[in-house]
Amino acid sequence: MPSNKVRLAIGSEKKCESSIWRIWSNKKGDIYVAVRILGGTYKMSLHKDGKCQFGFTAEFAREAEQRFEVKQRHLELWTLPEDNIVRAVQILVPASELRDIKIDKSKDITWLTAPPKGAIGTISVFICKSGETITIPCDAENQWIVSVLDTPLRQAVITYAFTYPDDSLTQLITYEKGRLTSLTKDKCFPHGTRATLWDSRKDHNRHVLELACD
Image (cartoon, rainbow, N blue to C red; front, top):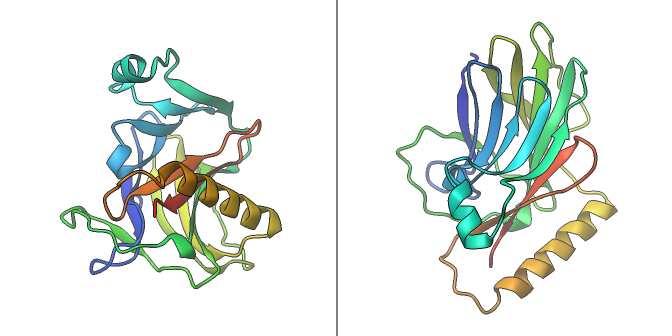
């Protein structure tokens, strides 16, 4: 059943193991992606005209300028191609980075099965023009359509799958985990603190890597 918002997390009501991700749409046809705990700070915007951006929210922009001396609240700008179906972003959560996290369970959350050892829990957001039908490829393990967000002009189809990293992605995860460990080794973060690393690239094929800060 199409809706206009969904909250996703890997785990279950008894054991949340990832951040909670919020994906929502508005009546104009714009679609947004954010980590729920940072939804008032950062978000990805996929606008109906194909123009996209990642950066500070309008509400946080002034504080960001004061705290970080950032003049431009949009840290990344790009445009989606005019294809009928476009994969806009993938959220990657390696099995090695899952932790038992305490959360507010009063929120309505769609729970996703934890990936097996060595795999990555992969949430994909596809933007589809109205009337298009998306089919699930057969080369991904345990893949299904999680939710469909409806707007008058288009849909956001959200899928989840277990994927296995190739050598380049494995090297990237290892590098980013090492860099994160180095940056946080002298810090005292609460148990369950997460890091979300949004990639920067010239094309539209965006990814977010979620890692544990321990």
